[in-house]
Length: 519
Image (cartoon, rainbow, N blue to C red; front, side, top):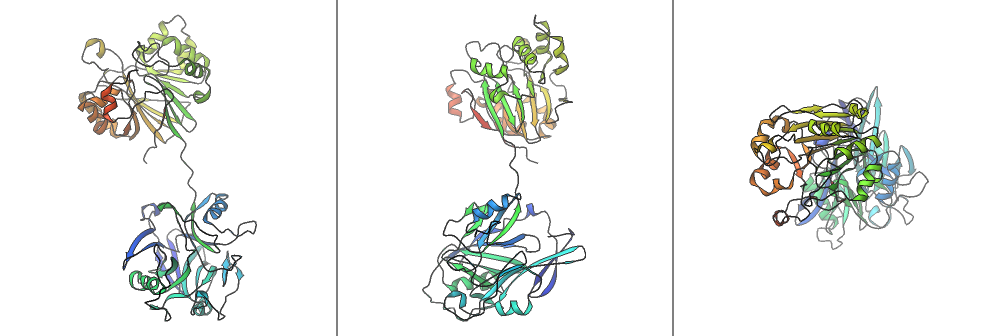
């Protein structure tokens, strides 16, 4: 534990050595790497004991031996923590009780064992790996050490955790004197050593003898002291490698603990019909072009069952915060349907071009009480993007840009108020709905600063953007989007779209993950 952020210390060999605090740990390289030495592969994991939260684990809060990394993680989850690294940490009896010294949370559970006897543990000198901690004023100093059992007895101080194992692999820069270079005892082995005020945990990925394993520490790692933890049962947990080695139950376990990162709220796009898409980010939900009047027999129309769910606000369509309309064409918008929907859902906001609002106001069922929940966008092509303000919805940020309707510059197309919306939900997911935008770069280039101001996770362009070089260039280079999912796909999907390899919506209720904003 570091109580003063700029000061840490390392306790090694009974002395105190000052170490500078590191920068952002997220900028540090991954702790575990595969290395090859003399034709054998080893996984090497390095940790600074003054900074990492290193602990020993033997029994859970009910007194049962953990025995596995999963059991340790289950216990840590109760306090919002998890393992980032772990390894079996010393020899044990059949009941998995430690053979030698074991200290956890400053409580000695097994005394040091200096007796002679059979087996690797008693291949003297054996040794101890321990963690130290003491406070001086408002600063907590943390460190660790690996040394022979004799050295531990002579100089260990402020011990918070310790595990005894054997034999020592390297003692003060020299190999254990009893190791034979030509030994035929080959096993998967693991150990812990010191190098430059760091702990170096190693697991061989191939069977090696003691001499090979110790030589890796001495000659490759350049470790002054290293301790054998075990063989055969050697196991490794490394979250960033996706490693969680399976095997028999273990005794003592050493692990590096970190706070458990809560998962980001679920981000999903659900296809409604034509250009209708439901976007969900956690509890925040919006819809684009959800209730068109007609598909002209060419484009998919909202199934009656889905329409009933939308109107009733049930299932996936419960809790909608806002509806965005790209333009007022009948295959995207129905004044009557939107009036009915807004009357049924008193909290929903509507963001639409002025032409759509005018169509609603001209309808015989228009309800003036809806006006205060409607934001009408009345901008020309080439105007600056409009920021859309939500006084009561803090989880949505949106902008609108008028991009001419496909078929521009024909006058009847140029007159359509087609809007490209970029919307960020709950600070995580950003989407862009493009309506029936014309795929000409001259419409997008003037707004380059706007596109670059925020990365879009998923754009929803009309499918024809995938079928022209200009459209593909806009998606790849201009709008600053990670990926695109095509919409406005005809009932009979064009063969050239099928052959393009592009992603698109054409199946009702189909869903996609939309990703998160990159901070």
